[in-house]
Amino acid sequence: MSKAKVDIIKSKFVPLNIENVDTDQIIPARFLKATTRDGFGKNLFRDWRYENDDEAKPKADFVLNQPQYAGDILVAAKNFGCGSSREHAAWAIYDYGFKAVVSSFFADIFKNNALNNGLLPVTVTEGFLQKIFAASAADPDTQIEINLQEQTIKLLGSEVPSTGGDLGEAFEISAYKKTCMLNGYDDIDYLLSIKEDILQYEATM
Image 1 (cartoon, rainbow, N blue to C red):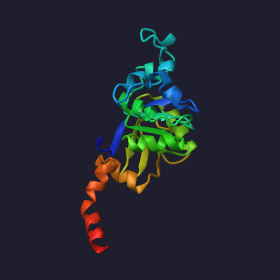
Image 2: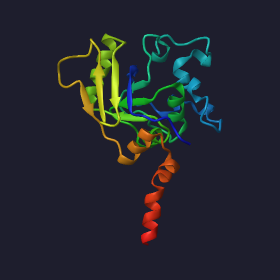
Image 3: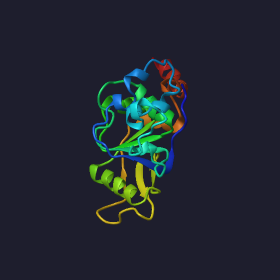
């Protein structure tokens, strides 16, 4: 399935300053019955968002229920996406409306699931992650700019801390996944994009 192209994401962000967020917290197991990728967003962090699973009783202290925080980017503390390998976790985050997740460490399976589903995982140093959280606490309107082509992430805004190092970092991503995300390719789309190269190679065999 082709996905939306990803190049530059510039947006406010939602700070989830909680470590070791596992996939069951991202999307509880009772919501895994659907066979398509649509509709999972409404149950993202379900048990953290509502009292007694009641949508009429949102928990005011949970960040997704705080109107000052919004945007296309989720910023999470270290070890995000640990636990089971359910691909639904990436589906839920993407379906909710996030285009990227930033953390200082991702579980490998979650990271791969995210990349396979058009959700960009950006790994930063722990020091830079803490700057992001500090900037958000000072001004919820602070923005982040992620440039996939250049593989950079920057903090933008008047309340961004101006001491203790740079306000941006480079991040790593596999060349193959980068190409796929820049072009909105899935694996089949990518193979079709290099069809002529494949045919030429086969002709030499």
